[in-house]
Image (cartoon, rainbow, N blue to C red):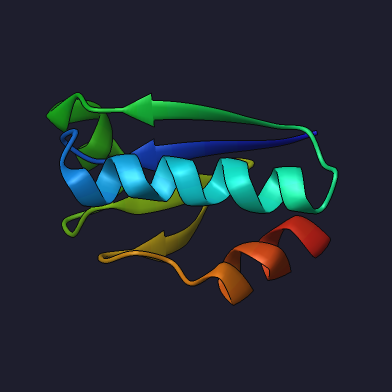
Amino acid sequence: MKKFKVLGTGCAKCNTTVHLLETAAAELGQTISVEKIEDPMQIISYGVMSTPAVVMDETIVHKGGLPSTAEIQQWLAS
């Protein structure tokens, strides 16, 4: 199971990113875990200055803006 973290302050784009991850995984029949990180100090500890950011298995895979469905599907396939 892949573990995702969505780093952001709880804005609409951050919440949409969580939804996109969950939807893409469900469409592919995969189980994932998604954790929202809203604490600014935790976000900074990843070296992220632009949110939302996505961390997959402790590797930053996306920063700033919404990820595309194609990007998410690539992450899930890897």
